[in-house]
Image (tube, rainbow over all chains, first blue to last red; front, side):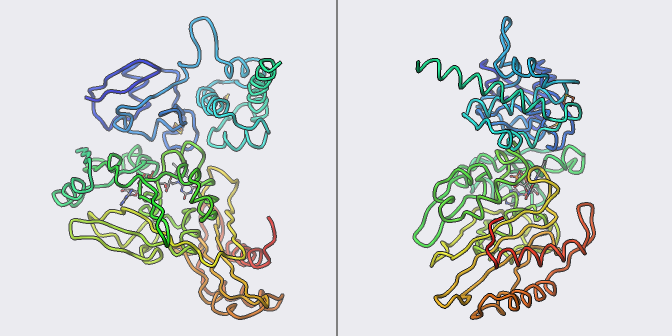
Length: 160
Length: 281
Ligand SMILES: Cc1cc2nc3c(=O)[nH]c(=O)nc-3n(C[C@H](O)[C@H](O)[C@H](O)COP(=O)(O)OP(=O)(O)OC[C@H]3O[C@@H](n4cnc5c(N)ncnc54)[C@H](O)[C@@H]3O)c2cc1C
Ligand code: FES
Ligand code: FES
């Protein structure tokens, strides 16, 4: 059996230690927000945070999450309110079919948390491992700029 | 399957002694792709990820020793690596995308021995040495000597990479060059990838040059003939042209899903030219 922290809760897992993290999240912990696109590390749909860093949960045996912190898309919102990045995707049309969206939002949220640059080129670079068949990416980039812009306004507001 | 998780180098080596056919697992970014496809069913897997001894970067007097489990993201962040080995930092920044860089390790990149691996040209021009450990003992293998062919190394069964040692480039090079040519910068395997270091002497003659190319032969290649030819010469249109011809004779590219041999010949020569002319890209 291994112990890990998922979205702030202590969890334990006693199945096969080589089970993929994505399958443990979806099947054992019923956190089905995380999606599988390719199962080969190419598409980023399965992106979650491991100790705060984005990783492909389809390429990780659950054993590698032992004693560590896993965060999924479910951690960004509470029952009443969406997270900043989610709000921005809604407002700017960053999601269409929605398959890429959880992974896209997680990578973008990482960028927001580390104070990443709001330049479109920098955003496209950090999102390079997240593929989308629907939006053509422009609306996604706009969404991220929107979310980062809010952070700026907030920071300015606090100073004033 | 059997999944073994040693906590130390000693335990890992003992595990391999008992099960010589076992497969090593580091960050899993290559391993899990094959695993998910069912290519590795029934194998014994030995997880190296708990071996703390192999996770550090140590600065020595003459060079740095990078533990095999250090990730591409950690290499990019490390101040000493950034200062001394910018070509390695540039390579790591172009491996897959951020989620791959957070998991993929330098040891896994080498052991996987892809002809298109992006760290190889940089490690080749910095003249890295690969340190290995096996139940039979330890070895130090010059970087270029580790590769036997596409996806094949000279590592023996149960022999593990423990560290990569890279000597500081002294005197400091006059120019350093890295370029990955692919369909796009991130998350695409290279059509061709190149790194170069150049030392010019006072009279603008070449004191030394090192140039390496990936994805243009079964294994990573140093352009030795061109390097030898350039030593002591001034860089002119004529000498650069001659060096470009010599590079052509040293590579053996193929047609594959990512590119053609003809394209790779042309681009390899042009990369050498760009390197020697030190043009900003
Ligand atoms: C979507 C995607 C994009 C990628 N893009 C690139 C790219 O642009 N450029 C590039 O170069 N690579 C790329 N890769 C390949 C891969 O990410 C790198 O090769 C990575 O460095 C492998 O390291 P790892 O720790 O994940 O290795 P693992 O997958 O754990 O292992 C790889 C192989 O090496 C062996 N091994 C691992 N560690 C050791 C050790 N210490 N001693 C002996 N054997 C060992 C394993 O048995 C296995 O055969 C990509 C992979 C994916 C999935
Ligand atoms: S499902 Fe994991 S990267 Fe595509
Ligand atoms: S919204 Fe459909 S794949 Fe991105």
